[in-house]
Image 1 (cartoon, rainbow, N blue to C red):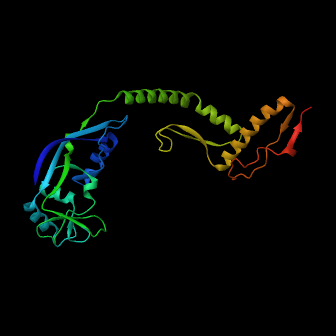
Image 2 (cartoon, rainbow, N blue to C red):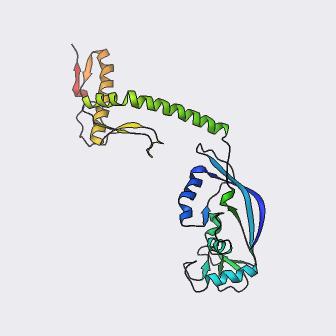
Image 3 (spheres, rainbow, N blue to C red):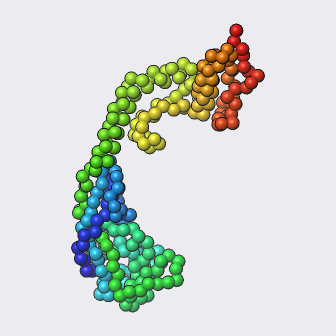
Length: 262
């Protein structure tokens, strides 16, 4: 295995990087991923790795690789193939490595080839053969965290302001709002921040469709009657099934339910 250090920059968002160290390395020495060639925006952080090793496997290496693959299904489903991650583990034991997942989809060699590396892509009948096999890899201990960009700093500042407002409203207004809705016979639930549904924003929702329908009908009726009283009439709430799916076709009110105010 011939290794040449080159400068080839790749990026990972910090949450993905942290996940690798927390979970991936418990089972794998070689991490297969999709590195980005350009820096993205991530307020949790962006990791950069520019220390790349261009690796060339020659015909001498091929003999060792064939011995690894021969007579076993450890490395390939067909018992005659071997994949790149296992080759790296063999030649670089106890070294944590990151490689592009695109290089790992197909076997690097088969034991039937005597003097060539062969790569068969999926179910294709075409086999690419060469006396060498080349790929790039990055060591996991050469990642560095990038400084925050202006855009990331602005996003962080905006998010901190939002959280401050949210915290104040949860403390001062949440219980009052839920109590008022309860007095209108509408049961609600408070969903705190750190939920996955709405980007960690705290919110209040109806506990079920029946209460949601009741809220919609009550709110629409209140709004319409606020307008109607200016013209001397009122409308009555339409009777809608408790579990109905309210949409734009649902009656807001019936014309025979209008009352003229004296």
